[in-house]
Image (cartoon, rainbow, N blue to C red; front, side):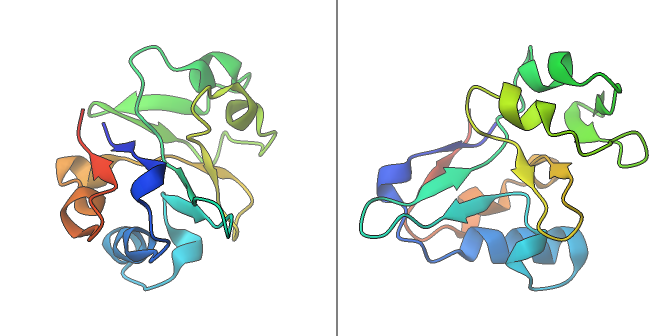
Length: 128
Protein backbone atom coordinates (compact mmCIF):
# COMPACT_ATOMS: atom_id res chain seq x y z
CA UNK A 1 0.00 0.00 0.00
CA UNK A 2 1.22 3.54 -0.56
CA UNK A 3 3.69 4.93 1.96
CA UNK A 4 4.63 8.61 1.89
CA UNK A 5 7.97 10.16 2.76
CA UNK A 6 6.82 13.57 4.01
CA UNK A 7 10.34 15.00 3.81
CA UNK A 8 10.38 14.63 0.02
CA UNK A 9 7.05 16.39 -0.55
CA UNK A 10 7.36 19.72 -2.37
CA UNK A 11 3.66 20.54 -2.08
CA UNK A 12 3.04 20.44 -5.85
CA UNK A 13 -0.23 18.52 -5.26
CA UNK A 14 0.04 16.52 -8.49
CA UNK A 15 -1.01 13.46 -6.46
CA UNK A 16 -4.28 15.17 -5.47
CA UNK A 17 -4.97 16.21 -9.05
CA UNK A 18 -4.29 12.79 -10.58
CA UNK A 19 -6.35 11.10 -7.85
CA UNK A 20 -9.38 13.33 -8.45
CA UNK A 21 -9.15 12.81 -12.21
CA UNK A 22 -8.88 9.03 -11.81
CA UNK A 23 -11.84 8.72 -9.44
CA UNK A 24 -14.12 11.59 -10.45
CA UNK A 25 -13.00 12.58 -13.97
CA UNK A 26 -12.54 16.07 -12.58
CA UNK A 27 -9.45 18.07 -11.65
CA UNK A 28 -10.46 18.99 -8.11
CA UNK A 29 -8.06 18.35 -5.19
CA UNK A 30 -11.02 18.49 -2.79
CA UNK A 31 -12.16 15.16 -4.27
CA UNK A 32 -8.79 13.43 -3.86
CA UNK A 33 -8.27 10.42 -1.61
CA UNK A 34 -4.78 11.67 -0.83
CA UNK A 35 -4.29 15.02 0.83
CA UNK A 36 -1.32 17.35 1.08
CA UNK A 37 -1.51 19.48 4.20
CA UNK A 38 0.73 22.48 3.79
CA UNK A 39 2.74 23.37 6.85
CA UNK A 40 4.94 26.09 5.41
CA UNK A 41 7.76 26.80 6.14
CA UNK A 42 8.09 23.28 7.56
CA UNK A 43 7.58 20.05 5.63
CA UNK A 44 4.18 19.26 4.12
CA UNK A 45 2.22 16.36 5.60
CA UNK A 46 0.78 13.73 3.30
CA UNK A 47 -2.45 12.03 4.36
CA UNK A 48 -3.11 8.69 2.65
CA UNK A 49 -4.64 5.37 3.70
CA UNK A 50 -2.16 2.52 4.05
CA UNK A 51 -4.83 -0.17 3.62
CA UNK A 52 -3.73 -1.90 6.85
CA UNK A 53 -4.19 -5.64 7.29
CA UNK A 54 -5.75 -5.09 10.73
CA UNK A 55 -7.19 -1.59 10.38
CA UNK A 56 -7.98 0.37 13.52
CA UNK A 57 -10.48 2.43 11.51
CA UNK A 58 -12.64 -0.66 10.94
CA UNK A 59 -12.55 -1.52 14.65
CA UNK A 60 -13.57 2.04 15.55
CA UNK A 61 -16.56 2.21 13.20
CA UNK A 62 -19.74 1.42 15.13
CA UNK A 63 -21.80 1.44 11.94
CA UNK A 64 -19.86 -1.20 9.96
CA UNK A 65 -19.38 1.39 7.24
CA UNK A 66 -15.82 0.34 6.39
CA UNK A 67 -15.45 -2.92 4.51
CA UNK A 68 -12.89 -4.67 2.38
CA UNK A 69 -14.08 -5.04 -1.22
CA UNK A 70 -11.90 -6.75 -3.83
CA UNK A 71 -8.95 -6.47 -1.45
CA UNK A 72 -9.33 -2.75 -0.71
CA UNK A 73 -10.86 -0.95 2.24
CA UNK A 74 -13.75 1.29 1.26
CA UNK A 75 -16.35 3.32 3.08
CA UNK A 76 -20.02 2.70 2.40
CA UNK A 77 -21.39 6.25 2.26
CA UNK A 78 -24.92 5.01 3.00
CA UNK A 79 -23.79 3.51 6.32
CA UNK A 80 -21.33 6.25 7.24
CA UNK A 81 -22.67 8.85 9.67
CA UNK A 82 -19.56 11.07 9.49
CA UNK A 83 -18.86 10.50 13.19
CA UNK A 84 -15.15 10.49 12.23
CA UNK A 85 -14.19 7.83 14.80
CA UNK A 86 -12.23 6.14 12.00
CA UNK A 87 -10.20 9.32 11.52
CA UNK A 88 -9.33 9.43 15.23
CA UNK A 89 -8.50 5.71 15.33
CA UNK A 90 -5.99 5.63 12.47
CA UNK A 91 -2.46 5.58 13.92
CA UNK A 92 -1.07 6.87 10.61
CA UNK A 93 -3.51 9.78 10.14
CA UNK A 94 -4.41 8.06 6.88
CA UNK A 95 -8.14 8.69 6.70
CA UNK A 96 -8.95 11.74 4.57
CA UNK A 97 -12.14 13.71 5.20
CA UNK A 98 -13.84 14.92 2.04
CA UNK A 99 -14.16 18.69 1.98
CA UNK A 100 -17.33 18.23 -0.06
CA UNK A 101 -19.26 15.51 1.83
CA UNK A 102 -17.49 15.92 5.21
CA UNK A 103 -17.27 12.12 5.28
CA UNK A 104 -14.10 10.05 5.41
CA UNK A 105 -12.60 8.58 2.24
CA UNK A 106 -9.85 5.99 1.80
CA UNK A 107 -7.18 5.57 -0.85
CA UNK A 108 -7.82 2.46 -2.94
CA UNK A 109 -4.41 2.59 -4.70
CA UNK A 110 -6.29 3.40 -7.92
CA UNK A 111 -7.25 -0.28 -8.01
CA UNK A 112 -3.60 -1.27 -7.91
CA UNK A 113 -2.35 1.28 -10.46
CA UNK A 114 -0.71 3.46 -7.78
CA UNK A 115 -1.03 6.63 -9.84
CA UNK A 116 0.40 8.79 -7.05
CA UNK A 117 3.56 6.66 -7.15
CA UNK A 118 3.76 6.94 -10.95
CA UNK A 119 3.06 10.68 -11.23
CA UNK A 120 4.81 12.21 -8.20
CA UNK A 121 7.89 14.06 -9.52
CA UNK A 122 9.50 14.11 -6.05
CA UNK A 123 9.05 10.34 -5.56
CA UNK A 124 7.22 10.90 -2.26
CA UNK A 125 5.19 7.69 -2.56
CA UNK A 126 6.29 4.09 -2.62
CA UNK A 127 4.44 0.77 -2.70
CA UNK A 128 4.69 -1.64 0.22
